[in-house]
Amino acid sequence: DIVMTQTPLSLSVTPGQPASISCKSSQSLRHSDGKTFLYWYLQRPGQSPQLLIYEVSNRFSGVPDRFSGSGSGTDFTLKISRVEAEDVGVYYCMQSIETPWAFGQGTKVEIK
Amino acid sequence: QVQLVQSGAEVKKPGASVKVSCKASGYTFTSYDINWVRQAPGQGLEWMAYMTPSSGNTGYAQKFQGRVTVTRSTSIGTAYMELSSLTSEDTAVYYCSRGDFWGQGTLVTVSS
Image 1: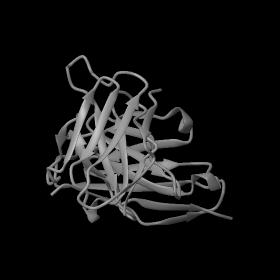
Image 2: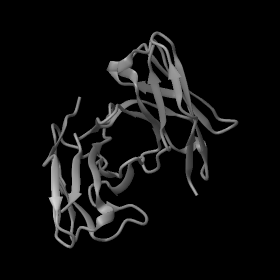
Image 3: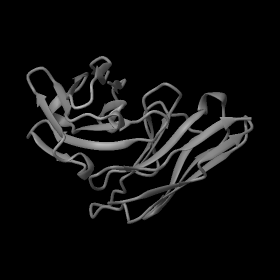
């Protein structure tokens, strides 16, 4: 099974400052069709996960452009250009190139 | 708009089974796989199973093989997840997900 490893596991950020989360997979997430099946989710306290980024770098509908995703193969990054109060929660990366889907451990983002 | 609406919270005794429903609306039910993911209290996300509603094909995480069954009713656009032989370690919020959209979650509490 694929293992997803996120760093850091927690982050305390001053509003308006950038934040970055790393995600590494134990094997390549690039499919033979050229797509890379890496996703980023935000789970706000008490809520269901919500999709932020799909296939490495595509923002989902309604996601602010301060969120961006990058990477390839096995190394990926989520960046928030200027953190806002509403960005608090736990961020998960996830792979779906094969079952079982695998999630990273989660990165808890707090506001200073 | 796309919605996945799950059944309400359940309290079960050890050894019992639970069946959670997930009603889809706002899209063609048979066009997207439905996945089941759970989250134990204070923990991360754990993938359990998927179903392809158009064909009925299913896949299960090794950890839950033999204990979980996912089914669907295409006539009413609803997916189901049944978990048997419950123990206290199955206490969790169970989510159905299309990947981009998630249900609101169903809390299953296993307690004697």
